[in-house]
Image (cartoon, rainbow, N blue to C red):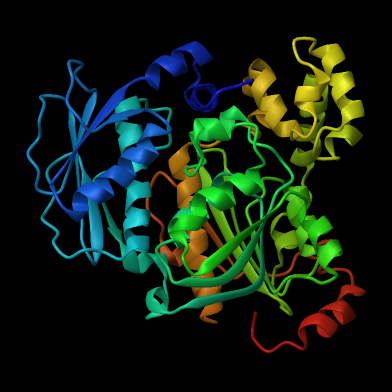
Length: 456
C-alpha cells in the first residue's frame, strides 16, 4: 500500500510535470525552523508540524546543512542557508524573504493557526523552488480581518447539540485542530465508515503511524478529545445517511468534510438544518460553503451539482481497478468487488481491500494512470497545509454561521496565498439542483425547520 511520502510525491509530480522518483527527491529538501523563545517558539512548532508532513522539517542543527532556514520572530539565523522570515502579532502576520518588522502581542489561537497555514505554504514553495507550482506572492501580510470573523465571536461559546461531522479525513482533522482554539461545547458525532490507510498520514495531523488500520472516526475522536474539555467527540463507524436513519431525524448541524461530490449531494438530501462545508481541489483551491434551511439561496447540492468530470473520474477509477462504474458508485469496496479487483491486481488479497474507498485504492496502486489523465489527477491527495487551510476556514465559517452573520454562502480561496474577504459571494440556487429544484422537499423543510426567518 502507498505511504504518506508517496502521496506527496504523486501530487508534486502532477503539479510540476516530473516523475514520481524526481518528485520524491525534491520533497527530501530540509527546512530548519529557527524561532525566538516563548509563544513564538510554540507557533513555530505548529508551522514545523505542517511542513514536516510534506518536506523535511527540523528544529535542531545537525551535520547536514538545510536547504532553507525559516527564521521566526527576532531570532538570529543559525546557518548560511537561504532564509525566509516570519513574524506575527495580535493584528496580522508577515512572511517574507527579507527580515520582517517586529510583532509583539500574542494573537488569538485561530489567527495563529491561519498564519501557520500561510507560513507552511510559503516555505514549501520556496524550498521546492519550481515555477510550475502555484505562485506564492511574497512578501505577504495576513490581516486577520480578512478572515471575516464577527466581532466578539472568537470568545463566545458555541453550543453543539445534535451535530454531526461527516468524514474523518484531512479536512476534519484541520477543522478540529482549528476549533480547539475556540470555546466549543456539547457533543459532536464523527461519522466515517472507512479505515485508515498509510497514505493519509501526509495530511491528517492527529494521526500517528500506529493508527494505520484503525477506524478513521474512532482514531480521530480519540486523538483529538484532549483538545476539547467541554466537547464530547462520539465516533460512529458508519455513513452519514445510515446514522440519520438510525437516529430517525436530520441533525441540527452537519459539518461536511467528505471528498465526494456525490456524497455531499446525498448529505443535503437528508435536510440538515445547518450545513458548514469545506473542500479542497488538489493543491490549488479551498472552497467553503454554508447554508441554513430554509434558504432561498444555494444549498450544498447546488454547489456540488453533478458535472461531467464526475463520470470521467469514475470511469478512470473503474478501468484502473478492473471493476464497473456501478461498483465505484458504491463508495467502499465490498467483499465481492474485492475478489474482482484481486484478479486485476493479484499482489493484493481480497481481505485487505474490503472497506477501502475506491479513490483511495486508485491513488495507491494506479499512480501512473492518476498522473496521466485530468480525471486521474482529481483523486490525488493535497499537501497538509491545504487541508489545514480548509479546516481553519471551516472554523471561521462556523463562527459566522452561529453568529447569524453569514451573509454569503461561498468562498473560494487560493491556499498558496492569503484569503481575501471580498472573494465571498452569495450564490443563487441552481435551476437543475436535485434538492432545490424538487418541490417535494419544500414541505419537508417547513416541517423540520419552519418558515424562512432569514435572507439565507
